[in-house]
Length: 84
Image (cartoon, rainbow, N blue to C red):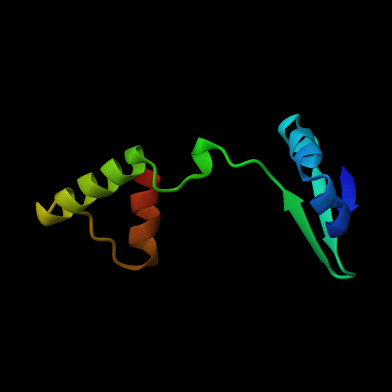
């Protein structure tokens, strides 16, 4: 793990991002009590991918068609989760 100041990060931003791309953990320290982890964003990190939007659309359609499950109470939830 590499810890750098925010000033140093600004000056050598590309270098540190390359290091993160190569698997190194980089922490940017800002002042005494603030620190940030630099992490690459992958396609899996993007919540609303086309596949996720399609799943949401399908769920909305299933709800309109009445294809839902109603769970009441703690025991009902346990039974439902146990059936999955």
